[in-house]
Image 1 (cartoon, rainbow, N blue to C red):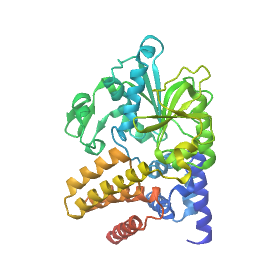
Image 2: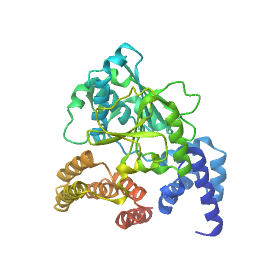
Image 3: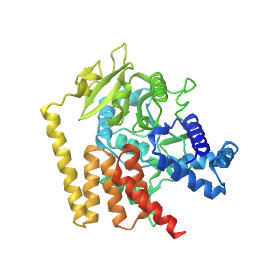
Amino acid sequence: MNEIDGRYLKRIQKLMEDKIGLHPESLSHNNWMSCIEKRMEACECKDLGEYYTHLLNSLTEMQVLIQMIVIPETWFFREKRCFDFLAAYAGENSEKFRKGRPLRVLSLGCSTGEEPYSVVMGLLDAGMPLGSFRVEAVDVSKDCLDFAQRGIYGKNSFRGKDLEFQRRYFNPLKEGFQLKDEVRFSVRFKKGNVVDYPNSQSQNKYDIVLCRNLLIYLSPQLQHNLLKRIEKTLAPGGILLLGEAEYDKIRHLDFQVVKYANLTAFSKKDEQKDRFCYKTELFHEIDEILNAGKQTEETIKEKSKKDNDYEKARKIADQGNLIEAELAISDYIEKYGSDARTFYLRGLIQHAMGHENEAFRLFQKAIYLDPSHEEARTYIDLMTQGDEAKK
């Protein structure tokens, strides 16, 4: 890349950071260029300078590029212990929300809707009647929100072995599964940008905010600003749920740590001390759960078990049992969450099945989480070269 193109690439990256808060370093150079070059070809722009000018003058193109860069990867009841936590919270406070104001939940970066709909299904399963809770879901992508409001999902949104909820809350269609109206109409979707939402104009005070695996894509300053805004919009004693890789982002803010059902959440301090506690320890310092680099014997055993479970899934894939391998890695993700190696392994499985687009997307995810992942990068380069050879 020549010096002029390098300058325009930085301007495009800065534009994306200002627009949606995306930290330029959260994507590799190859990923940036892959997305931009596809849009340059579609818009018939001969170089980055011309495309940058087009981007400045077209809100439509800005939205298309955002939607190409922000790749959703989600499914119903992803990291189920999070929803077990919410169900227990609802059960502990059910009388309060039935007789008083409703429980208010906010899903930030809701993507195609699987997370907020999972919240609704989990609350209904916990015995919370319709009307005793309100769920609001926000995302920057109009296409994702349109998809979510349609409420029709394919098999990729249903993972793991426990799919009983699918029978109870969905109707089968030729093109997938349609959410029943009682769930679909319980979520209020809204287009919003974490650069400025939630803000001081937000009328609601939320009891629970889900902001999982979003902070890792934002610049440090925006991470801090967003968390401060979330803190202000939480009701006293309100709960914030983050992705595991994001716990250190909250260390200097005024939250307390709540641990329940092997899940860590964060509680806004409540001067009246009337908050959800579960008879569990509340730590005033996040450092106590980050261990300051020290692993206990229990942590080492857990890591060993995690590695062993991953290796089992990988060996099944190596033996060519692809469907069984996909189920095994889905079970692994259900227990431990996603990381770069799970995205890479799922990419290999999808590639072996002939699902090139899905494989490419999963390899991209692996690189987003681990820019040094050479195997995923090699596959993307090979697949990109193959596409170019077909032209």
